[in-house]
Image 1 (cartoon, rainbow, N blue to C red):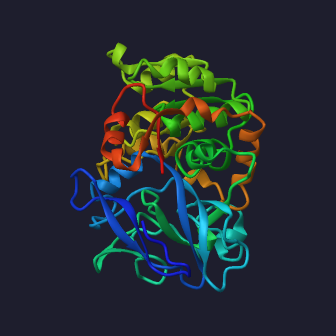
Image 2 (image 1 turned 135 degrees about the horizontal axis):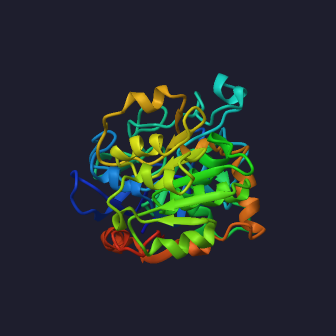
Length: 376
């Protein structure tokens, strides 16, 4: 690895996907210096999320070659001349959402989708260019970050300082999965005390939704997963009931209704991305009152939606990062982690180096896997 004494191009290693569905290659790439409003980060650790699998399979947009990764923590190596709130040497989380505090959406307080610093799908920075290349060949980013690289450049507004009381591995996990689930219960659904909840899919996102519902005082939290090994883990996060649909010939919605005296639940969080389960989530929620939050995304872009359950007074909401605003809301979740109200250690099941990135995908398929951490 070569580093210039002044901000210039850095040569480093990164995990690159060059074709949909193919194994990643660890290559030497070039990372440009930050532009005026950007920072360049030396990554300390990253983590693997199922959204990265989508990225490697060309979803939502097939952009190759590309460097995946949208969870991670690093130290700022250099800053652009217009950056005022971040300094070289500070530890930050590079996120895929920003928060300007001034646009219509930010002022509304009702959404975390900022107009000025949006969720990007074109694999490029806000100026339409990339900061990563290999021998002159442009490499696309994953959203605004690409954390599976020894160095990454992000717009300063997308970087959030890490509370020094929080471990870097825990901070990495909070960059997407767990926060998305927790925020969906807190910010999107606003789960009410004494209410009933079902969570379909008990990975990092689902366990986040479980914990969010528990913290908010839900009286009944039904965890649903076809993996029996998730039962005990989910119990530690707050489920009161567990359903394994593989052990029954009944539908998921029927099993939810049976567990609630035929009424269904107040809130359902669909965390798998399996299209057919959106209908099961709707029909498992209460007629006239039920709210379904769609969080999970899979390899299928669309599915059939049954209108009748929706017309019967149910609400469906989508969610990105659980509705959590990076600057305003994320520190509140961090505080709960620091105070041990949330135990993120239970999410970490495997640890790899960047050179073992394809092994990480194998770990993600194992029944006991929740979070794979990459150490640089």
